[in-house]
Length: 291
Image 1 (cartoon, rainbow, N blue to C red):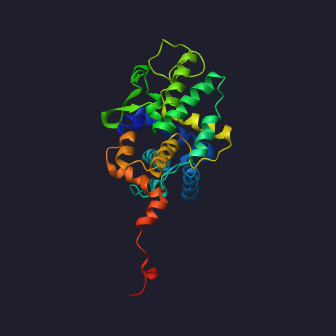
Image 2 (image 1 turned 45 degrees about the vertical axis):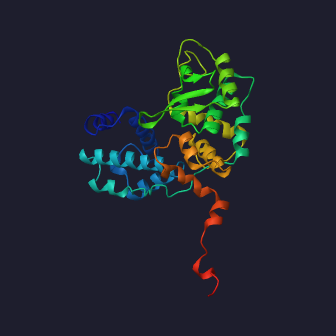
Image 3 (image 1 turned 120 degrees about the vertical axis):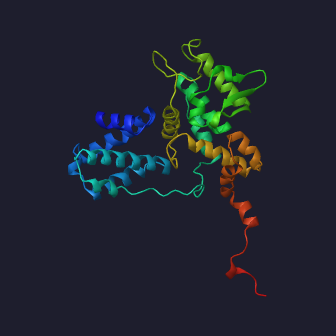
């Protein structure tokens, strides 16, 4: 594994964060198929990729495919397996904006928020995180990188840096502001870190990864007994956008809240408003009235 990571780092230019993700996938591969690539077969490799990919969304599935393919190419270059074995790893097809957003209903969102224990620091912290995701459509990375100085309490606004170094000011709903303030009053090491959300155990380091934020959502789902359409925090972002569309919020306003670069990305959510789509849908030719 070390030699493979050195090869990916030095010759493929892969970042450390990506290597961490690859390592998780490949450790599962080794646990499932064994440590010797020479013993791998095309059928078992395909089955492993399919099984692991079904647990996550298409983006994660593509990561699984890339990690396995890179390992097999590395092994083939060192005569550890057949050079054709990498061809057994199929490609994940993906068309931009072709799928429907995966979301949960507003009632389920409230169940997740209500699952947090208001008497414990973890519950107070997790509730603030869930509200940022559900009310403002934050990405997991937005939550992890939120700083105390980003919040203007008097103006009830929040300064947020988006993708491509784009910066926006967002309104802070009352329940979101109250939840963050409550957490800041209860969190440990209050003055030692500029990031808002910290871990639960000493030395109380800041939460700096999107996966940790997604873990908050997954744990809330288990507590609430809710079956989520996929793992992670992005479900709540999709759920917020879907609710806004159905409540009649204009798409350009939704795009501003979600910090989309293009309105085309925001129109992706219009597909879930079935009632409005029915109003503009043309009749199927076989159903049209005769002349």
